[in-house]
Image (cartoon, rainbow, N blue to C red; front, side, top):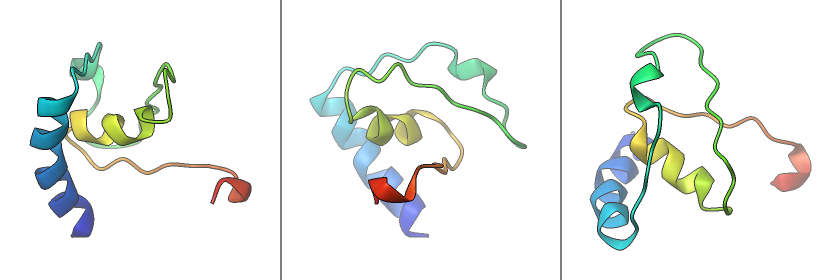
Length: 66
């Protein structure tokens, strides 16, 4: 629930502060597995990606990153 609450609050704020450009959003399936690849312009990609995709995003990362 916290995920969706943050998404609702942060999406309009991020769109006001930054110009986010997304290519290929129409190819993201509404269900099932999918791999989303950002071009990693900065660490912020991991913040913007969930805000522009209409489904929940879960990250897989090394334990050392946390």
